[in-house]
Length: 341
Ligand code: TLP
Image (cartoon, rainbow, N blue to C red; front, side, top):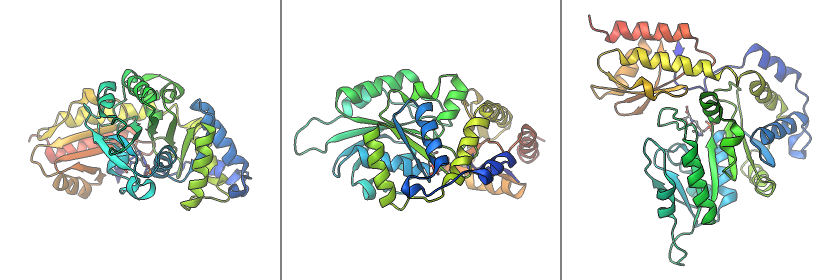
């Protein structure tokens, strides 16, 4: 199988498994796991934040951020295609009791003006707009990198209007690999940032939420309350540390594979995409006949896995466990199935 469903499908490499095996561990609920502590310090310093918290998933990192930035009844501004709004099971309503309000960006990207116009005035009969969340890279916009100018403009508005700001940086590493702008620079305008270790970096489990000490202390409390207190979690943190050290530099290779895949698909009749839009490791394309599931079934029968991202839309994601040869093999299959005779 050539598995392009997500960059989450990777299996730990031998070196990573060795690092996990050798990890020094302790009970992290007592704050005694040295490897977890080292991971938290490493990520906090990489992102230029005071403190960080190791969490089981990207969803938990984002939802903890919402929790510590808001009170029940507050309003959170999100882009309409964002992961937090679409793919986190409605958690903001249940876990934080907040109202989510979506703004529609151009290809997922909002402007400072849009956010400024959305902040509600302080009348007591209105919800209190309290937090703005952005995503970098933008999953639904095909891995697009959020332009720094817009990140700065939006967070300036947030600060000026007394709102908190959170960045869902599940694939922030890919943004840095694509532009050369350090993660720390992308993180700087935000109060809190969550990053994933289990996507492009190839660790089996884990995300990290970083931010000011007081908010991370509060997040630590809710992590426990939500059942995310982990004991000898150093075995997982070791994989994250290994990934940060060994798998960040190679992300650019995933971007090359995605570009090649996009170029190949763009040459086939019946598919619509512009390869120039592929900036990182995600390729999103449309099937002209309108039935993504049909195409996905045909591809699966030939050993190529991708996921639906709309009725006529498909997503393919490159990662550590697919090689350039795998990409060429997937393209050869697609040419055989869909190329002109
Ligand atoms: N995204 C998954 C699916 O849920 C769509 C994927 O395959 O891309 N933020 C962003 C931007 C994400 O893409 C994801 C995962 C998350 C947060 C959640 O991370 P996990 O799966 O670790 O909870």
